[in-house]
Length: 263
Image (cartoon, rainbow, N blue to C red; front, side, top):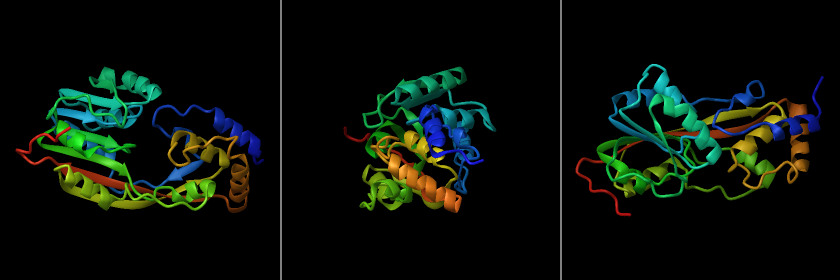
């Protein structure tokens, strides 16, 4: 028997959304994955690094997985940053036993590390990308390796709740590549893929919007209850709501001999 609108919404509104795992959506939503396998590639780079920094690590899930799978050791120096307190607590518990230090630092703040401190800086789905700061903390010859949320991500889902809106271009991969070059980095790889995201019940959408807060920045169940009810009806009729994700595999190198970026 189909579950009622109120039951689905109430369940999703009460479910925890800390950390950066999405297991709660198992069986309720599916996301097409990029072809390159970021976590595996991250593990390879960590294995070869001397000092690494993972930015905006969330609950540390991706970093811990990369350090514990095929490449079981972090570099001798392994640090991570996270700005949201619940995630920082999760990441601390997860990463400290593996030898990584978690530093609480907001995504939009200068990095609390010395110039040239790391030969590898990484990030998966950073909310903000400060290329001058990344260039500053990279050692000459060091690499920034990341998977970014690309431009036009989830515009279909956002527009369902917000109506038509001008789509920002700051996260388009060509724009990010130019920003990296402007910070003095050499872009080695900037590959974008458009991917399919499917929601099979309205509760999955509620939970997703509570977790991925920039999709509908002012989202709450009460504020958008009527739009949620309309979405529930659409999914009951069609069986799915489809949105489009965008992911960019980004790799840049700090040239040997490049002076640290000015603050």
